[in-house]
Amino acid sequence: MTDTTDQLIDRAGNAVEVKELSGQSTYGIFYVGEPSPAGHAEFLDRQGENGPERVFHHTVVDEAYGGRGLAGILVDKALEDAAAQNLTVVPVCSYVSHWIEKNNWQGKTAPVTDEVQEWVADQG
Image 1: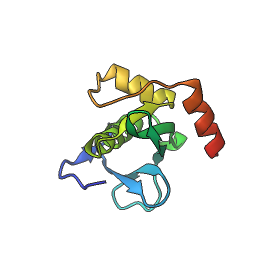
Image 2 (image 1 turned 90 degrees about the vertical axis):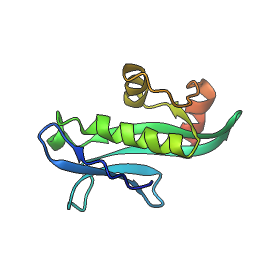
Image 3 (image 1 turned 180 degrees about the vertical axis):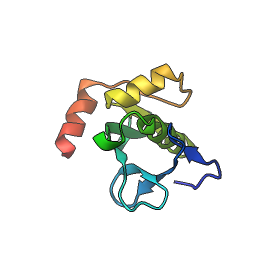
Image 4 (image 1 turned 135 degrees about the horizontal axis):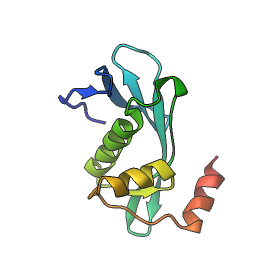
């Protein structure tokens, strides 16, 4: 994931950053200077019928950080990165699906099918 010069700020005015965690198929959202993520969005990459896909299957923010807008920042940046890599997003995670719809995201998406859900289950 490329670093952005835009400062990311939570609803309380604190600086956060989103990073793809190397080798973990996960994006983490961190408070600047903190070693552990406050939340993460898990994905799996696969070859779909129309090219490479990034399947987002789980997004969570630690309860202690709820209500600060972290999930939205996290998903926004994760989707931005997927689009920059020309990946089709498959939003198995209900939060990612809702975020895409709510924000009228214009990146490439593919529908969540039974086959995709079975594939995700087989990966775990």
